[in-house]
Length: 249
Image (cartoon, rainbow, N blue to C red; front, side):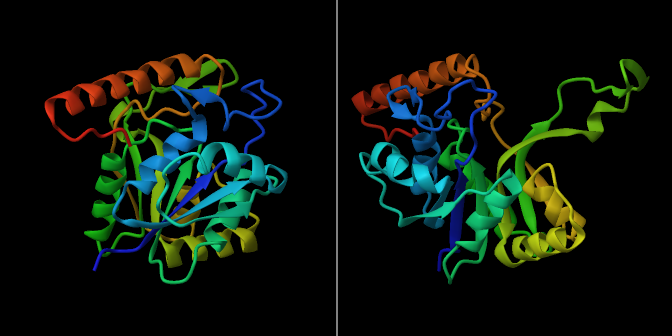
């Protein structure tokens, strides 16, 4: 029986740094709203049996009409209301996971380049590691990192010790719920979802995933993301011409 994974796509940001009063989730990127690309990638995974989209309640109808209904999304999908912080929003999404799911995959709606292949790879690592509570997509750091005091460098740690991490971050559902309870009791605010599980005593692995799984934060990020998506679409068209199966998600 296929393991049951619920995806939580967090689309609750205000887009302040992006500079768009309406946020960035519905900005058109290569012919689709930004957030739609992420949802479709999870929709195409055979592991994912439900999708929860976390967004401001006043934008639910708009997002549904523009980013979900026009597309052939076959996985059951529901909404949860975004909170005042990302951690609040993620908690709302995890709390909205229906009964019958063992795993939750948390993803930023502003990372449209995630692929179904990368999602499935991360899920498989978690499923095959019985003593592990979660996995995080990312890559070993290629940049040298400096520890600073003000503007003065005080240490250059070995680069081999560091990874840059992304989403999805995928967890056993009971471990993630316990992590939220622990964080709330201690008043802890994490920098990502994995930090909550780590603090609660959980074991989390990093899974090497494509480096181009970037997050759209500033308007100039759209240039890179659009170019990559258009390139994938062109490649898919070529595969169709030769009778092979395209992979856009």
